[in-house]
Amino acid sequence: MDKIGQLTGKKVVEQRRRTTAGNAVYRLNITSWAEVEVFLRGILPHVTGNRTREKINAMLAACNQHNAWEAAGGRSNAARIANKASQASRKENRPQT
Image (cartoon, rainbow, N blue to C red; front, side, top):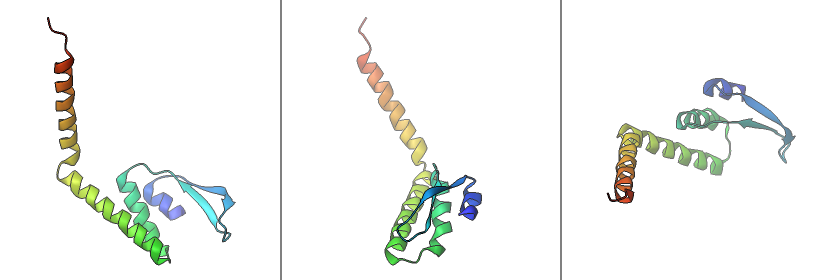
């Protein structure tokens, strides 16, 4: 987990509890898509269960979809649409003089 903390640039905190199998529990606060993707790619080689691997692969597919959306101008297009809606709302609610 220390390596994952170094890759993401975040602090990894070991919790005071254990899993039912007796393994340590860690907490890592990540807030961006890029950090999530680095974390998932970092833990994938260490995951042994097929169901968990499928979940991680599904999350990585969502990260890839988000990256494609951003590359296509998704964030700026969303901001432009929100600005147009805000302007239209202000225009409708403006008092008549």
